[in-house]
Image (cartoon, rainbow over all chains, first blue to last red; front, side):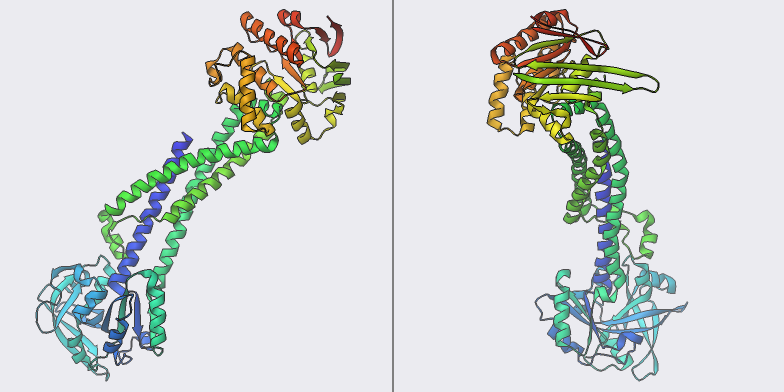
Length: 387
Length: 227
């Protein structure tokens, strides 16, 4: 009975951990692939006030140089402006990203997130992509005209009429409501930005592990620019990862703590039922250390049997949901508002399984101490007299 | 040669109002190779006396000297080790470990003594052969009769090569045939291998086999006769 309880508890712990880890990983993946990319390069003063006059003059050639790094998968030169978008109905503050559609494809999966229209495939004048949430807010649709009002680099107010050619849905409502994408050539003319200049170089690296190496090489090469990784650009995402790890262990420790009392209770029953046997062992010459260790080992084995069974079950369930999504679409809006996907693929960390096994053994040892102490309190003569 | 010397042994239990003298000043000695029965009515102090001899219960006063060592002067750890190496126990309720086979039950005590695997296996086979259970090595206690279980218990007591064996009412739970078989085995071991047996009993059949009979009543030796 106690083995089943331990197995189910650990199974739930392993699965929950894989679930939350998967959720966090998806969120981070989304931040990197849709919003930030791995590394961004700016003029050191640009981010202080999003000042469009603080641009990188030779951004195109810099992008080409960085693109030759062995770990770099793509570099996109972006023109980024915080401004206003207005429809016939209403207006809203947005971040306008002027991109080269082809190079942007190398660093962002935005082209995959379109739910209507197309990704700059038509040779129309001033096309714009915007999010579903923003389109609903502005009450616009494909083909509708919107006006972007902005400042040029000489601080003159300027405006341009753009036609909506695509609507995307990244399942992150905040992002979808505050971002629009236009061709860099269209916006460059509007704000008088010199050719080859840009505000932001977005770099996608082949593996998250290689980000520090690439970041340090780019920093070394372009000392006068600010080179930030996604963890520096969005520290809350980095904390999320660490917080999830901590949360997973706290959750498992709570489960083990609850099981601890069950194990103590079971082992106390075992010691009580075996008073005579323990008395006999002490009488024939088993010393106190051996009696103590006998109860400790029995408890650890009991805990480990249930624990390993739970780990096995939890692993099987988690592995299944690594390829089969868990649909949370009933609460989809809530998750999208927080930037999370409404479906989750679990992510099981091998280190978690090793650490859970160690925690189960420690729980077994901890649970054995009181029953083992009670066993030592047996007086052999009295114990042998019990019926 | 004395195997055991008991000097002025007392065990007094102090209840809330009543003082019970379970062992009340016993002096005697046991020689090597004796086959001794401690007899007396229920409550006469037989089991308490055996517990004091076996180092299981601490006397109120007096000495139990085994091979020149007063066992009650030993520290707790030393006393446990002394029991392991010098005293064999046979209990009324057999007290075998239910999850172990007959062979494992016998081997276990030698494992505690730290003997080699080969020595353990050879001696276990010999002992179980001697008690007539050479064909039941792998049987668990639940598959053995009461008499067979008690014979395994005798083999276990012998396994540690003790100086003497204490048996507390070893036949109390056995039928007459099993009692007869067990007594024959114990008598044979005593005669052929000079193993000293001290057992408490009120079974007349056991008393008939004993060569020395010590009668205890109210914690005192009433009579001590050798045949």
